[in-house]
Image (cartoon, rainbow, N blue to C red):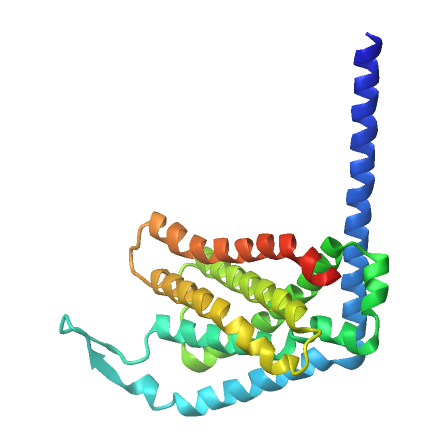
Length: 259
């Protein structure tokens, strides 16, 4: 009985230690998130970069697609359809959000290296907490941009929503994938010279795959009478990619951050 009691006490103590570490990890991540939000509200570097790009892109789209919206083409089955259909409009939206993300989210770790606060973060927080805080900041920023840009884009191009729940899941999946990709690439290129050019070069292979998944899911979203399993398969594929990037990045970030 004594051994059983000792084992139970040891297990209880271990659970208490793990719970304290978990609370400390969440507290560190929240502190980093709050610090980044305050720094961004003070400098507005990412907000200005993303806002300027999206405003210019929306203006160009409004001017360039005026005539395209009135044109029709005949598909191989002999059916006349709009030249710029809903999946193509959704694809253009994701291209816009992708470049907006990469124009503003690249400063996540570059700012720490330039101001000399990276060492302080290494001493204060665990690598997992640093990654979580940076990822949450980028995700919140990108979701905010998408929340503002998407209704304006839909009004300009006439993009239909389709199934509301599927549309919402697709938008959240896209924001998660873009934010997680931008975060880990920013960590990889923060210490390099010419990190801006390297940022795009490293991120391009990952983005091509993700954009293809998003385009495939967008095509499924606007299929009339599509079975539920098809929505789960294609939209779930985009969501799974974002979750996969988060999981792999969390495993590798310790080596990147401490290097």
